[in-house]
Image (cartoon, rainbow, N blue to C red; front, side):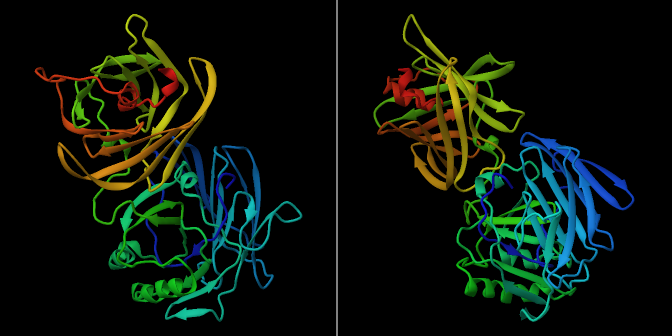
Length: 458
């Protein structure tokens, strides 16, 4: 894929399958002469998939309905023979292309094309065709019904770009011991499993049809740990994703907390929602009060007790964005609008998942960049109490940094900015309660509290 780093990856045949894209983004499927196609779209973009079979000469031509490109695909064995293989094709409007071939007879290891370059041995054929080279299954490391061997030149995928692929689907957090206990997660057909870890020697594997595959998984994992730096813990949970027969896994945000990957579960934008925070001496409050219409979108207003405002809300019910805000300067309030809005998060949060926003203009002027890095799940203790399910997120804008902790079903519970800290004291609905004596805090800290880190606006 154009925007995905190439490193190393693991091909597994006949071991784990965690589902397909069915039901993701309300796709529409079409059946025609044995060919199965799907077209769909979501907030990440438009994508298409196709399943078909190469002819007896190992050739198939596919034309993308999204880009209009034509792809000539040939499946070739390492013995030089062409043969008919099953083809899985994925393409989207973000420049991501995946072509996977598999041999149901299990005489060959699976082949993979990513972003118009064969990632097994060769690049585009001299005649303009994609040659997918599939190695003969023969004389490799054998674990009962599983065969495996180390490969060279295979890629892995950058986590941030991986989670931005429109067709990717989060399947859940599982340990390898958990997966093998469930027959629904085992399959006798070829699939590809890609670990999102740098510097790992690649391994290919294929299995014969057997009811005992689960019993061989331990041996395969031991082989991977011995021959690579992967160091898989069979009891540790990993995040699993699927895209049309290719499954990815990376370390889970937490092995102990039943956390969510959806930023909506860590924010509250209902009118009248309120929070109070303390720095140990002073108390400041914020609440959701009204809307500001920006570019046709009614964005909730987060207002603090010092009169500052932040404009944050969801786009397409998926992406959380910051649209700007207003600083209370007495008679002459200063309002600033970001164009484009700053991306905060979505429904695919992951460990060290970064959301970049660049070429941001403020009130049509200047240009700067911002990034939100969702680090991990942590336990946070604040005056309100102990909170086990909190996402830690770091926002970096130019030379400034703000660290926020978001609690499940609560919202912001802790803030570090400008060398100062605010912690959650209480929260609720129905508007800020009366009878609280609110104090003034550092203006930068107050503005960061409602979602805006820009010191240059003060």
